[in-house]
Image 1 (tube, rainbow over the protein chains, first blue to last red):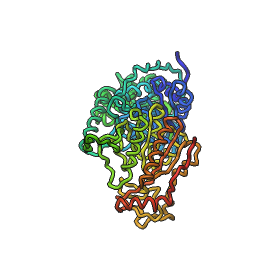
Image 2 (cartoon, rainbow over the protein chains, first blue to last red; image 1 turned 45 degrees about the vertical axis):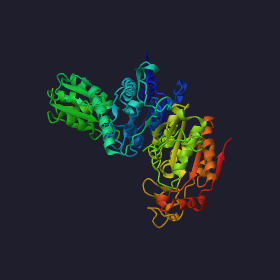
Image 3 (cartoon, each protein chain N blue to C red; image 1 turned 120 degrees about the vertical axis):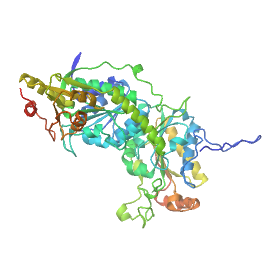
Image 4 (cartoon, rainbow over the protein chains, first blue to last red; image 1 turned 120 degrees about the horizontal axis):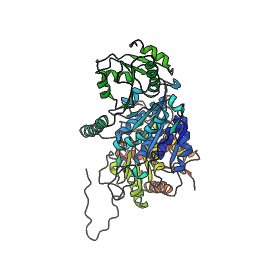
Length: 350
Length: 256
C-alpha cells in the first residue's frame, strides 16, 4: 500500500522498520521532521529518542548506543554535519555501525536552507580527520530514500562501517507516494559479539579508536582498508537510463539526478541521443561502470548543485577517454530542465 | 606489564587485595598521582555492589585514557570531553547496564562542559567520576579551567592571571544549582580518612544509579606532582593548603 509521505518522514519511518531503536538529533532546517517523527514514534516501539544539546553531543550519543549494540540513527543538515565530523571520524576508527542522514543545504557557513550538493567532498573523501571512508548512499526519490535507509543499516552492520544518506532539502521536504518496505524481523539483525553488553561469561569488550603503537595501528588500518576494498568490490550501485546509444551522458545524483532524467526524456523527444548515469553509492563511486561507458560515449556532462565536486570523480573515472564538461548551480539555486537542456545542446545535435 | 601475584602464607588472612574489577595491568599513572587511589576506589565500589558483569565504563582523553586496560569490564573510549554523551547513548540503548564515566578537569570542565551540564540537567541515570587536579596532565601541564589563581603552568608561566584567564571553574557548584542531578559531591584522597569518605561517595554514586535515582557526580580534588614539579608528599600538602581554598569539600547536592 502506498502512502503519501514527506522525504524526511519516510526516512525516519524506514529507520524504525530497519530496527533502529535509538535516535539522537538536534534541530536544523531542512531536516527537523526526522527528529520530530522519531520523538513521536520511537518510544512506541520501545526505543529512545533524545534531543541533544548539540550535533556534537548527538553523534557521541550515537557512538555510545552503537557501542552498546543497538541500531542507531542521527540526522542533520550541512552545518550540523560539520559539527558531527569529529564524532564520525571516531565512529569510523572504532568501527561503529551508525547511520547518518545529511539533508544538504547551501553553504559554506550558515548559507541558506535551500537544496544543494556542496557536501559531496565532506561525505565521500573522509570529512573528519584520518584515513577513513563512509558508505555514502544518494537517493533521488522519496521511495528510494526509504529503501536506502534500510540498506544503510544493513551495510553498516555487515561491514562495521558508518553509513551516510546524502540527501538534500528538496528530497527531505517533498511529498510523494511511497511503498514502505516491511519491518526487518529482530532475528534478522546480525548479532554483535563485540558490543558492550556487560562482560558476563566472556572477556571484556572494548570499543576504541586508540592505539599508541604505530605498527600495531598500521595493521588495524590495513584491516580497515581491506574492508573498504571489499565494499568497493561488492557494493557499488548506480542507475543507467537510455545510455545504450547515447552521444552524451549526463552524470548526476540525488535531486539533480531526478531532474536530469526529465532532461533525458525531453532531449529524446527532440531527437537528441542523451542518457543518464546516476551514481547511487557515492562512496564507493561507480568508477568502473563509468569507465566502461566512456569507451563508447564521447561526452559526459556532470550536473551538480555545487561548483563541481563529484565532477572530480567523473574525470578520474573517464580519465581522458571522453569530454567531461561541467554544469552546476550554487547557493541553493536549482536549475530547470530547460537550462540543462540548453547546456546539453552545446555538445549534441539532433 | 602484569602484576606479580603474592602467595599468601598458611595461617595468614589477606586484608588488602586487588579488587576483582581490576585487571592485572599495571597503572600508567605517575608516582604520587592520586588517579591510582581513585581508580582503585571505583573498582572497589564495583566489587562491593557485585556489578562487574553489567558495568560499562567510558574512558576519557587525558591521564586516564588507558582506563579500559585497568578494568575487567566492558569499556568505550570517548572523544575528548564527550564521555557524558557517550554514556548517555549507552544507557539509553540498554538501561540495564551500569554506566560510568571517569574524566579529568580539562575533559569534563573545558571541552566537555556542554555534554556534562546537559547530561546532568537531563538527570541521566549515570555515574560520573571527576578528577580535578587543576592541570592538563597528559599534554604536559597546561592551564586547566580549574587552575588556581597564580598557579604556574606551561601556558601561565608567570602564574594564572585572573584578569586575562578568568577564575577556577567551580563546575560542581554550577551543577548543584540544576534540578536534574541526584547527587553532586566533592571529595579528596590526601589522607586515610578522606580516602574512606571518597570511597563512600563513589559507592553512593553507583548505588544511586542502581536505584534509578539519576545523575550522580563525585568530584575528587587531586594533585599532579609531576606537572607541579613537586614531590608527592608536597602534592598532599598542595591539595590541603591550596586547592581546598577554592574547592571546599562536602556534598553540594543530595536528592533523597
